Image (tube, rainbow over all chains, first blue to last red):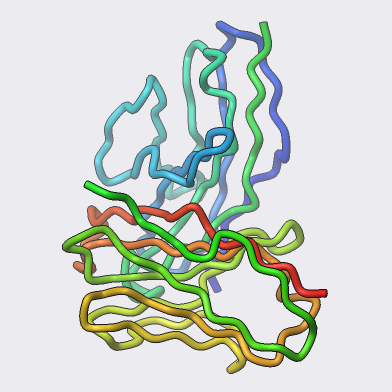
Length: 112
Length: 115
């Protein structure tokens, strides 16, 4: 069975400090990994997906199949980054990209 | 482009009752997925509908069902409500292709409270 693990419920960093939100997965096959974000009073939205290999709002994430990880990183945290972040997985075994398995989420708190 | 809408936003029911939640996808989207979000279990996939057919199903009991109409609007129904069904129910719409580049857009959710 597939599983996504986000070990930290809360990550508190100072503004300007580097950020790393951890995500590990378990999946028998070729996974597709995503990061979703939910800002206060807003709906859940896609932040980035590994297949695009892009940087969104300064965030990047690299899929490491050897370590089965997909950590989200940003070199300098900003106040507006404070939000709930969810790592999610889909793949051939789950059927389609419409069936996502989510981690439990990490709340990122950026303080001055 | 209007986003995904869900109605009602809040609902209070008692045990044993049934409830129907509605989701209107983004125009042009043919896939609607439903998720249950609870503090204990997090976000869990319920099912997905594409072109009026259930294409994927999660591990939920048969009390949870859904359907999709020809205009892609979707409803989910929960019968014989239990206290543990109290949750935020999210729907997400997408084009429905099988490509991983297909993005799911989430609605604001319906908060169901079972008393």
